Image (cartoon, rainbow, N blue to C red):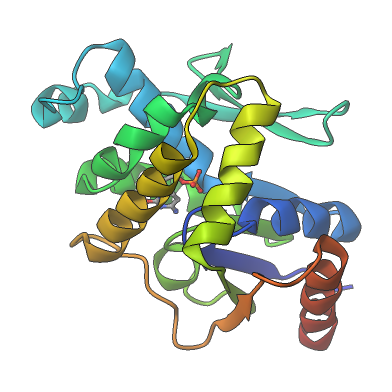
Length: 227
Ligand code: C5P
């Protein structure tokens, strides 16, 4: 059967990665979490002390981008690929609220985007890929056969992210999570380079009131119509 490229974009915590992982597993496709790549560069920036609440040393980051190697290794126990920064597994570290609070700023930098987009295009060049992010259907794979744009109310999204963080033992306040989700959406939608917008040919799915099964069935139906 022919393999296609599935691009999933949308606001923060809309469940993109959940449906992308389900789809990739069902279809035997590769899943690429591009948010994890921007989070990895953010962690690298934080580790070097180039970003904090009061400053962001963009020049140092840009001139050291050649020292960033991001890779994915499939973890059969988890059923998806975990992200590595320079050979170190950072899957857990990149999901903290602290990384989330800087990632959108780092993601505005064109040199960062250029490097990551190039890598993403390489990973998806043979099709048979489900990739999620903010610019997949508009920039990374503008000719993807199927483009989805996920939305959900800000409250639903913040609640999901809050529960995820609490479940893994992080001490966070709901209001901080909600503020972070709203701030990221604002920066991601208003940046100059590759802002988050719905591609003209993307299909919008509002999953505020869908169960995971309903969401998966909806998406699988769209995939089957595309194949
Ligand atoms: O998907 P996730 O919420 O982990 O993404 C974290 C951040 O990475 C986003 O808020 C956005 O700033 C950035 N991002 C991006 N382009 C992508 C994927 C993520 O700018 N393709």
